[in-house]
Length: 114
Length: 113
Image (cartoon, one colour):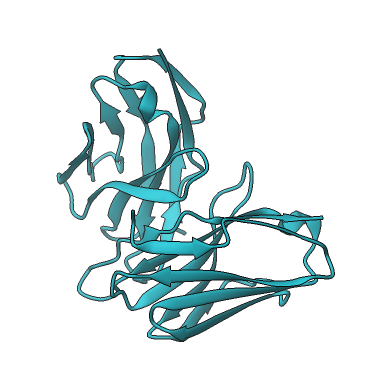
């Protein structure tokens, strides 16, 4: 148990659907992250939120829309996705500052876009 | 820019064999270094870390030493078990940003009984 939970664990959606991924951290951290893990590709950082403000957005298509309503919750809203967006989406959290840069990951949501 | 290079996998070993997974890095300054492990169907778990040169991180029988002179952080274990079968990721934390972990491509380890 890493203290970071993600729901749902698996998701199948059509290209015209709208869905949301949820992440919750119970570690009291002040930063949260979304990563994409595709087969045979390095882990890709998508978004970073620190103190509930987005501080990084790595050229992610607008069909992915993050939301961070408070320091414990992070969402990834999905709409009109493409089959190539099928991947494992990982959430992570960390305590930024004072050298505490270790990130703790959730179990991921495996997404299949048909 | 900063980068992490890991040995290509898969690495296949028999139970109780000695494990080494190589990791080298390129970075400005002195980043922190990490090994994460991903078991089948799960997310990444922190395995060990080292924050300065000559530090040794260790956990669950795994060890890695931060070698500044060779810019390496090789993962070792003296006797692997079937349950160690997983994908192992080496990563560094950029000095100019507390937010970014740079990951290697991962090395799959398969341990046979």
